[in-house]
Image (tube, rainbow, N blue to C red):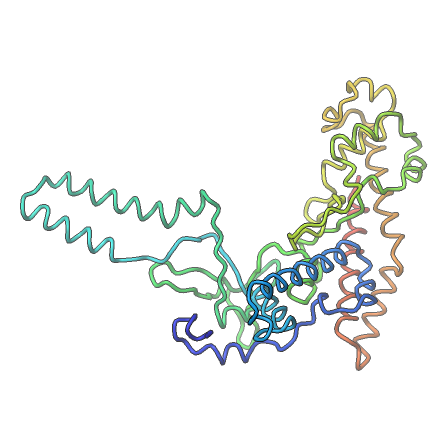
Length: 385
């Protein structure tokens, strides 16, 4: 039972406190998913459904009793509960165990007391045990990149904020437990304490936690791969023609993305097509600027580079740099113009939803999500020099 797995602790009050249902995109209709106006999220949810279905079917095939005890809906609920509440940290070793140290202390006392050996020999033996414990708890887990995930009742109820968290979760090595402490300058009485779930973008927050963070510093936008861009529109914007050999070289270098949608079992893989990644903190991927420098290069620039994509990693000329950034900006503009609604229309929709009753939460989330993505695109357009 759950209580036995929890070491005899009564887990029923905590389980009863969990939501009976989750309003994540996993449960949305196709029309609601379309309202996100964002292909990577739709693909990620489709993959998530396929993976969970396969995992459940594998469990049913392995145990005839499994399906009679746990329905598919219950299985999904359990997976979502664990996925949204489990956390990990920098430390992935075990808790402090006093037994080895007590044993060594006793052996050292006997060793010296009976005159079996010298103090230096006893100290060397004790040092080996201490070093072994340190290696086991702190060094080896980092070397093998071990990752432990924990669900801790009460702490799992703390909500997330990307920047400016007022609480911190830490593993207490000597007491074998987790603590939630207040960070300076503290939390005002009656105010909520927020922790950080890590650098989560809105794709992750909506898909697994069911909310969207406005002005999320860690947000990303995944554009279609360069092979799907409107090259003719980029040529018109730059006043340059894409010369022969450029696209072929970029394709061989893997900078055009994939021609096929390679779906796998990693439910975090929202970018299975090798799309262009845009982040709020760093802007457009530098590798994309490199690709555009090569793509929009003149024949002289192409020949001077030895027709090598690697030679476009840095600026080759002011004119080429201007063409590359103009192409990038035009591609972002085309992406923003392709949306079914504008930023202003989405903002007005949100205002209307706030003033109305009976609006489904998924409608609000869909508009809020796509609005944040469009704002990110607009910021990037403004910031490309």
